[in-house]
Image 1 (cartoon, rainbow, N blue to C red):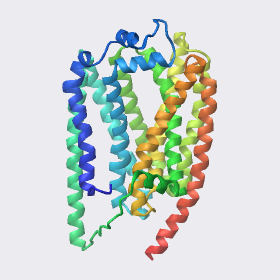
Image 2 (cartoon, helix red, strand yellow; image 1 turned 45 degrees about the vertical axis):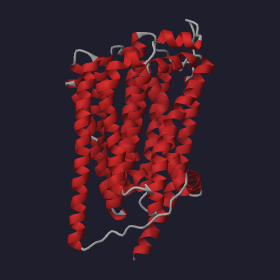
Image 3 (tube, rainbow, N blue to C red; image 1 turned 60 degrees about the vertical axis):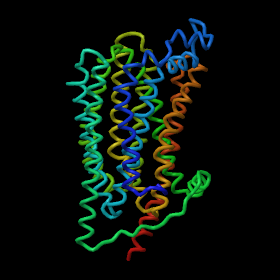
Length: 405
């Protein structure tokens, strides 16, 4: 952010991800058996017993399937970088705070179209392939096309803004910023209560959704052991998430505009708190029987669906609106650290906590009571931070308006 001009930063951040997805599909995945060890080889290397359990088994599987693990990691990082930084940073640059309550929920509504289209592409085309490898080819072709269009739309949007500024005579003055080391950036974030609270919101969502998401996908794979069946289910699920987001966003627009930023920010942890109770209860009842497994999958799907809908419709717009009253340095550097590190720490931290519970209780199902206590503790912490940030956001917004008068 300090060394590169914004356009260069956008392209240099975005393009390598699409290049990796193309290389994975063309080179890495077809040769995966040659470049990664078999599970039995890993067991021999680690001197594991055939009936070994716990974290060592998971680590062995990750090592034996490191190419797929790498793909998952890169895809997860890209999801944060593409939307969390590239898109919202551009939106923050061009949308004034007075119009944010009007346009940000609409941005979220438009983003709801993406999972609808992508999900149906997976269901009706990608998952209809004869093999998972062919399905991956079909997905990669669409991802590559989407990457090209992202870069094209970004260029066209910037060209339009520059032409409009030239007509109106508006000139954007670029301020030269002092370079900051990693230690200085850390102190910069730590010294700001406002940024710490935004980080808490991002971290809270990352932890809480991870606590329920991993367990849900585990029982989902138990119900759909075939990869293409699982892919079709997730494609339909993504489409429903997108459609629900588009519907709920109409209420979100009014909630944020009429009830205020704080209500919109508190809505997501409130929804997740209400829906998690029956979901955790169904897990505790057991999932060995088909009917019990079906009930747990249904409740988990509903919980995940509405949690993600609330996230896209309310959490994302309110979180991104919180950056607008900040100065340019806090926006760029604080946002980069919070959106990438905060969300990644949230998900990786949630996985680490669950791994520790698995080592203690033997499996994630037996750890459900302890996990539920941690889950609700995180939600309380998240809700308190949202309440406190709402007070600071209102103060900073009024301060910004007074400076412009």
